[in-house]
Length: 398
Ligand code: GDP
Ligand code: MN
Image (cartoon, rainbow, N blue to C red; front, side, top):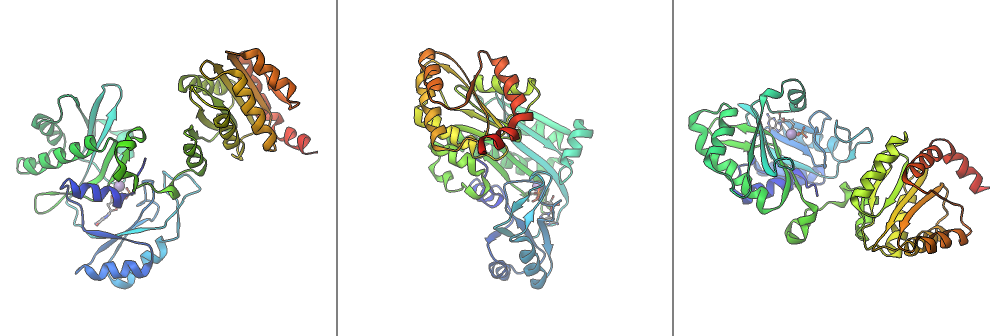
């Protein structure tokens, strides 16, 4: 789960990580009211969306007067903010963070993430932080340091030493830096974060640090033990189909391609997506209905894929283990009867009660393609999506 910058900064405050004073506004009037509480300019007006690169898209602006502040709030609130991370469709801005302006001595980059390769919390740091960190990473990767922290041992001063060294920090900064990194590590572990990123982290004239930006992602699988963090969820920022799928406990991720697919088991789902790509098509989604899926879950999964307008053909690939093939077939037939299916559907199944399952599909009177093995299924669905998708639509409409 991603959370907004202003929410991440609330968490930072709980762990005594310095952030600029600020408050959230939904209208220009609210923005002005917040500005009146500050005694000086500049103030920063920052769009709150679940995507970075806001500065480059005009979503972060400094104001030097009340008029300018109201103007920025007016311009940013309600704008469709396009940044390198939103895709061309952009994101609607519903809230802005009004924050005291900070003098910048130096912009640093600091992040913590879960590194699956080393099974460690990886600290990534660079003295060349700011809006062009992606260019730094691509062109001068040696300017970015990586320090793994074994979670069984936890963070120690020598880790801080290593990171501070890579950032070329003055000795006088070491104690404040240690406090910062210890606080961030505690926040990261105690809240089951998968990512925590500060870019830029500012070195202040007073010899301390301030997190000017804040990005946090929480591991969804750990949310059950962080009920307080659930309040941070913003459904406006999530994909409507993914929200719908989460209601039925389906593991669904919306993607860019045209081939919808429904599979039981994450490993098999990955293999099916590979098969689709190998056949020259692109998957429209990842959907793992799980080992113990019911006919109702199958029906809901099928309905969610069908309501995605990008989808031009669907491949259902199920290995009948705990989920029996006849249950799957019942679910598919029930869904297909309720919904007007306008794209070709290919079913490939194997395992428990496969004969009964095939029988149910055959007797349904629905035009569902069956495929014997995965390769055939992948090739067929790719071909249908590429050429027949539209023809099929027209034919089945007439
Ligand atoms: P992002 O572009 O989405 O990562 O948004 P950031 O919060 O990182 O803001 C973008 C840039 O705006 C930062 O890298 C800073 O250079 C600048 N910026 C943000 N807030 C302030 C501020 O209070 N004072 C100054 N001088 N610059 C700021
Ligand atoms: Mn940033």
